[in-house]
Amino acid sequence: PTIAVLNGPNLNLLGTREPHLYGTATLADIEKSCRRTADDLGFDIDFRQSNHEGALIDVVHELRESAAGFVVNAAAYTHTSVALHDALVTVAAPIVEVHLTNVHAREEFRHRSFVAPVAKAVIAGCGPDGYEFAVRHLAALALDTEK
Ligand code: DQA
Image (cartoon, rainbow, N blue to C red; front, side, top):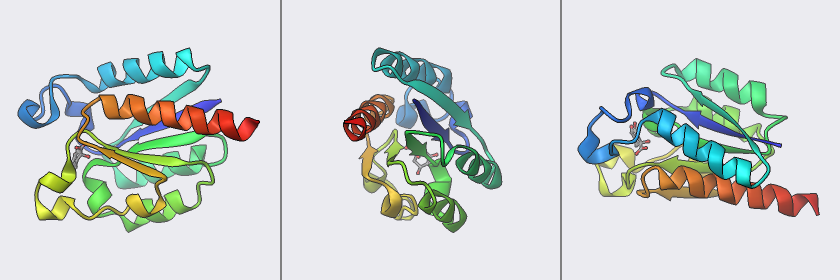
């Protein structure tokens, strides 16, 4: 089984982008740790990033029936995208929303999420560990439903 990991705009710049906020790990580092965790649990990872709202929606459509779960860090589209929300509504598998930073301790405009209403869980402020926690949780859920 495959866990999809979706990353929104500007996350390709991780490592150099506002490191005081987002840390020094690159998106490739995060991908590696997701793969390591998933591999230990017998899962594959389909890891994607796009700076384009429609491209992220296309990925949801592509994987909505096959993925065992979705880790979603929609970055700024979290706070703006009704279209991504509507795409995620069509996903039957569980979704975990992840943010590197604690969005609730930041600007007001980051407090609203269009992903949260369709997420089973939300992880914010754990840095790259949040992705790993999300992968672990989705793998546990998938193994549980197999029983
Ligand atoms: C983010 C938080 C968002 O508010 C921001 O637009 C991002 C990254 C995070 O991972 O902390 O790009 O999703």
